[in-house]
Image (cartoon, rainbow, N blue to C red; front, side, top):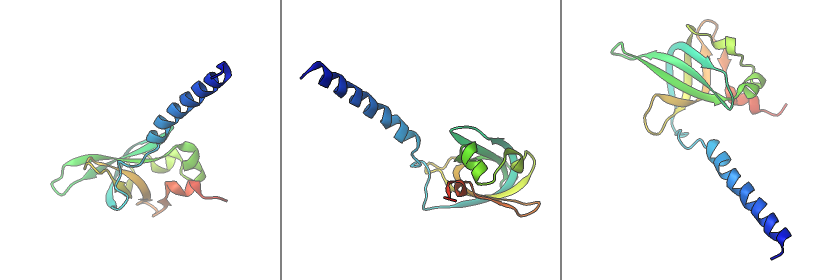
Length: 132
């Protein structure tokens, strides 16, 4: 094999290896897309960050115990295209939120839609992927 072919092969292997973690990063396998959970609570924090945003919601259970749920969404650019701004879901706001729960039972889900209780406005992160 010529030195040029060896170099080309080495570059191809490096690029292929780099693609594996990227694909794994974007996996949604931890969420059960066959199930949905809908909860009502109060926004604790909106982490409007790349590569994924998280909406933390304090949910009071029947026993009065508060559990913080995390709802994963897309990054800010996709959320902005969906019309979702950080200030839309400020700490202390009451919301009802639906998501695909974690397979392992932890209090987290992939955010499907949220409704702000004060005006019933709905927020759907994936609508930021719509072709316009």
